[in-house]
Every structure is written in structure tokens, then in C-alpha cells.
Length: 78
Image (cartoon, rainbow, N blue to C red; front, side, top):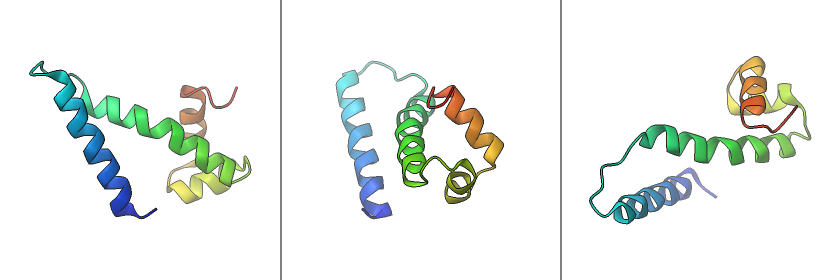
């Protein structure tokens, strides 16, 4: 899957979200999208990295401590 395809999926989902609002004002769209994308992204990357947080953090381009906090926040680790 290319970066362009991911962008198209996000765009289509957001277009549908706004249609579903039927004129209602949106609220916290940024937080909604980040939360919806971040958990599955972290889950997949951690599985691909075979649970190695250092490797996953490197792949994600974030600090390992930041990754650990996000994994805890999303209840992907205890």
C-alpha cells in the first residue's frame, strides 16, 4: 500500500464523516483522526517489530519513551 493510497483512504473516510454529520458542526476532528489512526498503526508496527519497542520506535521515527507512553495510553501494553 502506498502513501498515496493511505491518504486516499483517510480522505474518503473524512468526506463520509462530514456527510454523516448532515450539517451538524464537527468537533475535535484532529483528535478523532489521530486516535482512530494511531492505535491500529501502533499495533501493526509492534507486531511487525515482534514486540521490540526500540525497533518499532525507530521505524515510527519517535522516541522509545514516547512509543511506550502511546502504547500504554492505547492499552496495547500493561
